[in-house]
Length: 352
Image 1 (cartoon, rainbow, N blue to C red):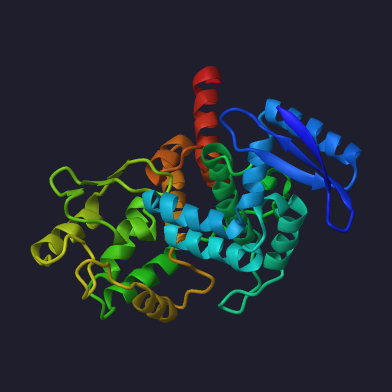
Image 2: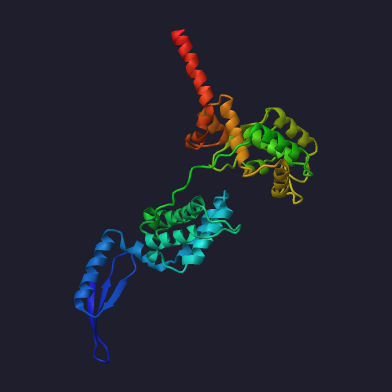
């Protein structure tokens, strides 16, 4: 039900107060100088209410982006521990830049402006921010907006749907040559850190990520069957990882001298945290004379060995924990010789 009330101030100024009431919803009202404007507002508001649009818009005017981010960090992220620290940092960047804006004023153009600011920024290491990093900041904000739309009813739609993501370059592929691998293993073995060699051998033999290795506990490692069950992986699914040969021997040796105050395979002095790998790793890299090589490249090296030893892309995806083949297609060229042998064998049998 709607009504328009004519009002006259003490100075004789005329105004029109429009009201819209609907059962189950708060009363809505606005004041106008002209009655035609009041009538139009009533018609638009009633139409929006009938189409379930008005109250979502009202919520968007009632909450700021800072409130959205605070609620997402407080209520949602604790249930998503994977990469939560990075997402908090990324979301707090958005909060510091445009957190004061109400959600109704967060437009694709405003986000695109901040995206460009991100892209032109410099990281704490003094390097330009990469397109992939910018996309992670956009992804963190997008997930928070989605929650506000779907579950909280704070917004009618996410402005992120109309924001273009920076185009990322081709995925970086760097893996060890045989000589580099031998040099690195030698320097790791000679390291003063008692765990470094075992960590690197595990990375090379299984393709596990650094975080997965450092998070290994004795509860998930089966020395008799030679495997580990990763419960908390990057893609959120449990993964079975075979541990065999030299890697298994090293883990068995570790089990004989394991610390009783920690469940971790590679604990730091603080029993609840894994050791800090950065310093011993960088020292070993320097002594081995390796350039442009990151710990994650051990995973690429493992994948390249799997391919060159006849593993299919589907098998590699399963070993590395990729949900699709897209991520492992980067290694396809390494199997060209193996593929050629398969084709030659087929032709031999078919034509003699």
